[in-house]
Amino acid sequence: MSRRQLTKIEEMFLNSPTCLLWPRCGCHETITHWQRLLDDPNQRFTLEELEAAEVVIYINIACAAAHCPDPETKAYAAQQYANLTRRRQRIGLANVKAG
Image 1 (cartoon, rainbow, N blue to C red):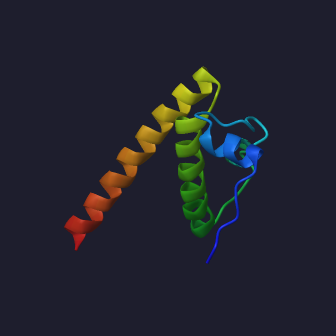
Image 2: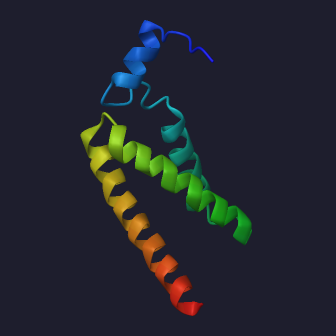
């Protein structure tokens, strides 16, 4: 199977050390979407919705921590990513110990 050649703009996006779309990228939109929803005291979620949100937030925070061009946001995302990673590791370890 042959692959097509990347366009110059595709190469630019793939090779850039930072996100060229920030704050119009999907990561920013997803993070701010969930931030608004989670800050709303009247918003109710099922356990399944919260579990799905945790995965989506984790993935998007990881991207922001690695690629965000804004140093302050990148540092905050990196700290949140580290916190979420430790939390996931604690939960995984507890599940292994439980059986």
